[in-house]
Amino acid sequence: MRTLFDPSDTSPRRFYQLLTATVVPRPIAWVSTLSADGVGNLAPHSFFTVASAAPPVVQFTSVGRKDSLRNIEATGEFVINVATASLFDMINDSSAPYAPGADEFLELGIRSEPSERVRPLRVAESPVAIECTLRQVIEVGDSFVVMGDVVAVAVRPDALADDGLPEFAALAPLSRLGRSEWGLPPEVVVKERPSRPKR
Image (cartoon, rainbow, N blue to C red; front, side, top):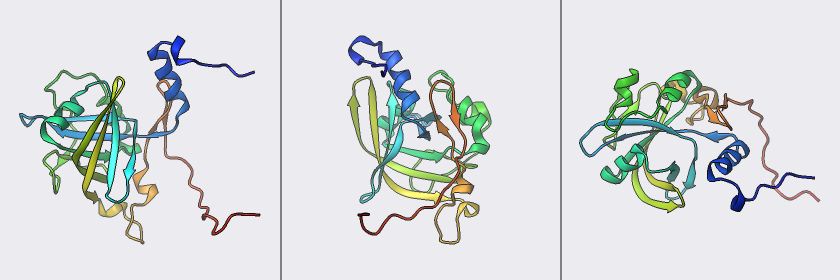
């Protein structure tokens, strides 16, 4: 007999905990933005994926109206930095509820570098940065799905494999699980897709 959770008789907070403990692992978008006044912001968001390949569009969800969202709405630009295991503590620390106007790059001593196509800074130590301009924001309940047109992907040379694409071992991506749990880079298994259905 399964335990049934009904959203109509479960508190929103408890149902959030249920969903985030179930939909795992979730890749992390470490989002850097600038306010309208030019103040930097850096925060992790764990509802993150690719929305479209052609045109290239990525998306992340802001649960509630946070600084990242407000800055993107004001400037129309953001960068998604790959959240790598070597930066674990900084990523976690940047999730703290800093006061509006605080620059997490400065507060935490995170080294930044200029982006190529947008104004928000990149995390210098992140192996890959996806530079985006705002496509649209979709309000869904208490959350906001932010879709960004990818205008450049900046990859550090030491993160590229022989085929010219980012190498998983160099990305060493973190993921979010339930509660206060995080996922470290998983084991990689190579399995080709079948060319035709099995009989």
